[in-house]
Length: 96
Image (cartoon, rainbow, N blue to C red; front, side, top):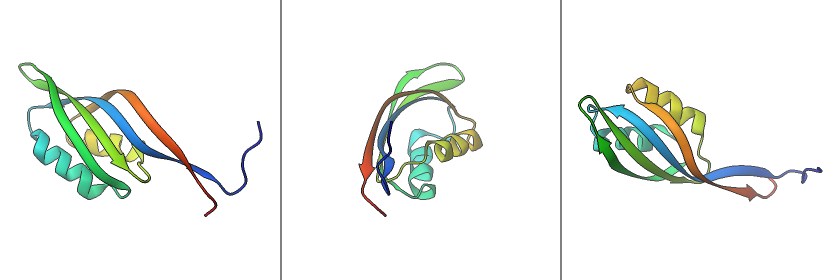
C-alpha cells in the first residue's frame, strides 16, 4: 500500500480503561496528565468501579497529537495500569 508523501497520522482522541489505586484521586491524576502531556487539550475521567484497593476508571483524552506511550508511562508513575484502549480517533495531517 502506498503512503502519501509528507503526511502524518496523529491520535486526536482515545478512550482508556485504567486500573488505579485510590490515591491519587481522579482530579489529581487527570490534572497531572493534562499538565505533563504536550498535545493533550482535554481529559474527561469517570470512575466505573470501586473496590477495596483500586478504582477502574474511564479516561477520554482529546488533543492534536496524543502520545499513548507517554500516557502509559505517567500512569505507571502513579501506580496505575492501562487495561485497554477502548476507542481511538486518528486523523491524517497534511504536509509538515
